[in-house]
Image 1 (cartoon, rainbow, N blue to C red):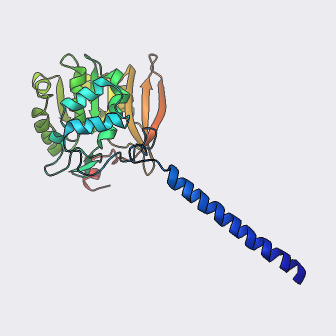
Image 2 (cartoon, rainbow, N blue to C red; image 1 turned 90 degrees about the vertical axis):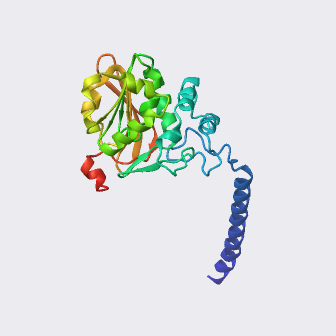
Image 3 (cartoon, helix red, strand yellow; image 1 turned 135 degrees about the vertical axis):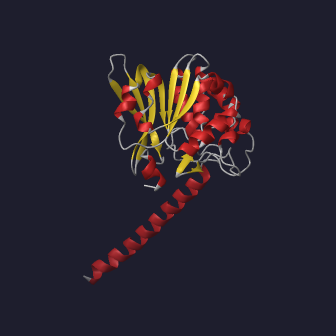
Length: 277
């Protein structure tokens, strides 16, 4: 038995040394090949990622250029709309509007990070053509609703629905200061106080529907108000959430795919939201 131990212990020590050398090499290789800050985030990563931070970006145009450089904005049309609708008009006073982060807007609600808004506009671009109808559920400060209005134009219809009356008033004031103000004045853009889970049947069907809060499941009224050939983008889930792309086919059937993992506030009743539930 003693002879066996004499043979085993040197082998074990050599094995530990060998494994230690491998570990050191792996760590050094990882440091050498680690991505630089300009490439470490990719559009294929979870949309819970933050693409940039800090106050270096202090202009709306700089924000849009960053979104383009990271590959979030892929089309000239989406870039133009985001350049024309200044995000700085749609955040609370004192906030840094151009950093890539969601921001509290009061009432246990948030405005999404710029990369999420850009992602949703890209997903919906073909369904936001001039003359089409678009619905923004949980419209908050009115930012994305204003973007929709510019894309569908005066012959289309952009509708925001929000169940917090103070946010409805705030969003209308914000839109009045933006490039979408003429569309609000002529009636092709409107914001309404209601439970967004019920949609807004008056101007249905909608070619594009965006939902800005996470639902435990896709509300049936929103599916019913989606135009055949239309698309809805909606975060779904509770603790774990995915951004779902819902396409209604010409025969009325539904196709659903997952775009990415996300983290949104819940789509719930006004009472539950105000309680933080």
